[in-house]
Amino acid sequence: MTPTAHILLVDHLADWEPGYLLTELNTGRFTQEPWNVVAVAAAHDPVPTMGGMHWLPDLTLDALDPAESDLLILPGGAGWEPGQEVPYVQVASRFLDAGVPVAAICGATEGLARAGLLDNRAHTGAAREALQATGYAGEGHYLDQRAVAQDGLITAGPQSPVQFACAALGMLGLMSQERLAAYEGVFGRGDATGYPVLMAS
Image (tube, rainbow, N blue to C red; front, side, top):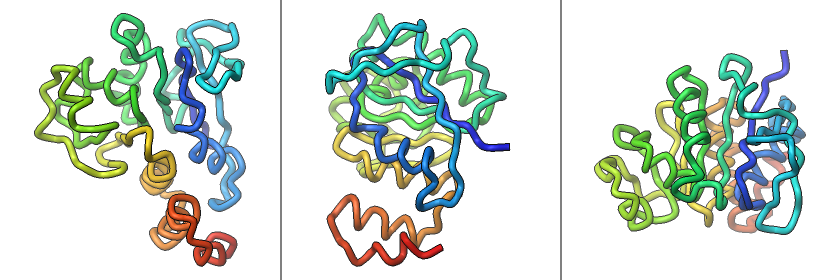
């Protein structure tokens, strides 16, 4: 059965943050294993992005079941503002409890922090100060890295979409360390010497 990744479409989501990860999962161009990518929102209405696009959900939150998913992707966006984030952190909590990997970037990490979901998990985010501002109790587990993948949780800041993708693909076992290093080199640093590694079958 083809694996499935679900991405939550939060209000005014940050288009670029999940872009690399979605591309590699959907196409399988460097993993040789295309995934189903399913968009999930609170309602069936198109969801506006920060880039002015409108993304169409395939599924609503009330129909989302961790047992039918292999990964939950949480991009940043206005939907993580206090007061708006409750349904999304509830979903993330259900996935983590079920042992399904959760990949959160930028504002999503702050939403998870406010919900207490980072209090006992290694993580990173936009910056240490951004997470401190949430008043969370997990600062002792903060790592000053571009992306962190441990214990079923992937986190990153908005400046690290490539590293976010690498961390998720590595946790999922979809790329070798050699290929991940080449991918980060090509797309994160513009180092074309990694292309032969990526293109090798």
